Length: 365
Image (cartoon, rainbow, N blue to C red):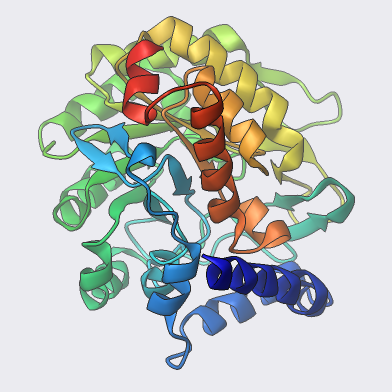
């Protein structure tokens, strides 16, 4: 135990003092490419790193659809867009991994610059617009790393600008994962707003359900998604989101990821607008989890995504109704020890509240 703790401190210090300082000298998208290449270096012993990062304790086992996952901390979509980092990410200590978001055909996304750091707020603004290698190459990666995908609950995030694109993606990817997340919420892809219409969403879900063999998760927009203009006119109010959720429940959707980045205007990016992620989203995530759990009842899964940076926030979200929490931006600002820290904190809170495990905690909610 002492060896593990000292090793984790060294990893943490190395990231904050050395690695992050170098990465932050570069454009954020280029820095992400550096991270991606480093995750694929063949000489890094990721299984040994996993020994250090994983918190192996049955008290953290979490009911998740018809499975039990090792802990309630997941990797959000966007970090591993092309399913190319599974040898590394499956050793980060997550209870599940979300890869993607992937599109049916290869696409380059929006014009650069399309990613900007808000360092003081531990946040990012992005207008990536779903750059993707496309389904065919994505599946090649899944097959290449299938041994890693078997060790961790794997969700694939998909999207498209038509019902046909999303249904085709679902059919092709369904055999390679444990769940499919359908992203209808990107602030950087205006065409996705067609699925904010309840009739269009119903049509989509009816078509997907014809081929359903794994759980379906819908990734929702936040309460306030903006049609970016000078007046920041608000397009979607809370009632609109709840209407979409009701339609999802009627269509037997199994879970929700709440939520995506919050749209804001910015002159820093070529598109003139983007979605903000990171620390500043936490309060909105908490409010949405509380409202959604009250609205949908006990059973559907809620993945709380947005602004989670520490164990205290994760514990509060779970106590307010989240099944799991998802991380992405906090990995960039805090490093790969963050899932370990959150899971250790959750164990302490279970003990403090005299709760045996997360199974009992969720039964009592």
